[in-house]
Image (cartoon, rainbow, N blue to C red):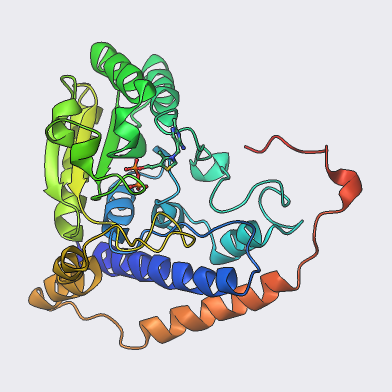
Length: 312
Ligand SMILES: Cc1ncc(C[n+]2csc(CCOP(=O)(O)OP(=O)(O)O)c2C)c(N)n1
């Protein structure tokens, strides 16, 4: 990874963390539509994997992959407008959180049905191969989501068809309140069904980036899909309505030591690459301005309720 990419990756991880913190405040003020789903402590998995892609590749994020959308150019303003349910947001108040796509930026909209995006993205990858395009498709799945039939169907199809699909497995400790040993035997990587599989420290952004770049290369060489398992930890509840009381505080303390942001700063410092000291302040100011302006936007009008319910 070169210096420019590293600085950009750090900025996107920090932006994700600060954005989610700002959203939590709006949630506690009762201003968001529904709960706020964070990627606290696991920002590196979404950001570094998306960062390793090319501009023509296509992603399909899940709820905890906001960072990947920032990598593709989504703005904090769009995310605020979504969470606030405003008429001028990407789905005009029909959907909330990060549930919207953007074909121009190579983003297929997230869906709530876990696993469902894997067959969809296998189809996207199939279309690339049929058209002879050097592009890859990427999507993410949690350890709980990898217990679905759709996960197995989609990955199996990609393996037998040798499709350029990267499935990023986020082994983040809990599926809602269920620990992995209560819902899957063995390790997540054992679910690969013959895909090229790697397991990486998901809190080491540089390692995640390198593994994702290798997975992409594997796909571009026509060797079939890659399953990249990132071992990380969800440092907050499933969403803001969940206080995570079922998680041992000692485990949280252990993972706090492995926070991907300071670790990546240390990695950069080791290379003599300094981050800008004022970055956090500047991003927070940018987020504040975006939140304030989004709060002034109008609600959708009732008579438009049945219009535009389909959003790409
Ligand atoms: C097919 C399906 N079944 C159940 C749910 C309800 N559900 C939403 S999130 C969740 C837990 C997901 O856990 P995991 O995949 O490990 O992701 P994490 O939340 O840990 O990031 C469940 C069961 C769903 N959205 N889709």
